[in-house]
Image (tube, rainbow, N blue to C red; front, side, top):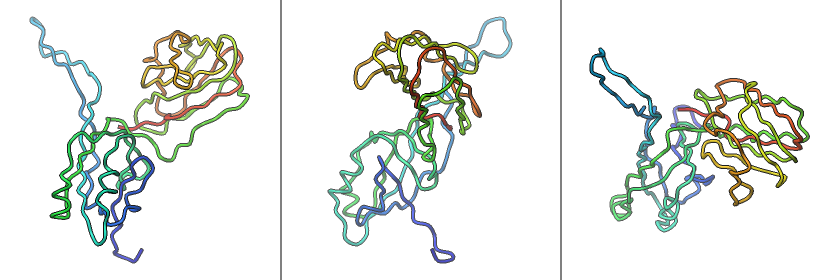
Length: 238
């Protein structure tokens, strides 16, 4: 890139880079911002002030201005934005968001005036594009996993083994897992356990909401026979 040349904006939707689409420009990106904290504010008679209960973070919208230039295939561009899943913006190339496009895009305006707005409805947390899935074959308890983000994370964990597993996080036992099927995947964010597409929540005893990887290092330990563990989505940001 020549000195003074500005880097071209781009987005990546479900691993497809916008720069691969002929004639599509990403004119501007939304600024990096923090999601809104949802609160419940309660006033109690006889008490000064109020009671604030934090309810979590809200999903929010990120606006992207797009344009056309030269030769373009508007059908391919329509197809590109007719999706949901994960998206990376070039002003945060090391992160991805989970998104949906809920509002209709004015493609007629895009063709006529060569510009339009795309509104990405993103979930409040973002994840690393650089963190690889951690895989442990024939692991020995304990193992350590680092949350490189700035907020506690709720990972996806796959365990293979046999019998009954007692799973602990940071020396606190949280789950009893029945591995009679030989394998189970637990999505702590979605609060579900499954094998392939079959739910296996009855194989897990414990409160999914308690499995939070703190920022920094975390210790995962177990008793029982485990032959393989993988961990994904272990870093999370707001």
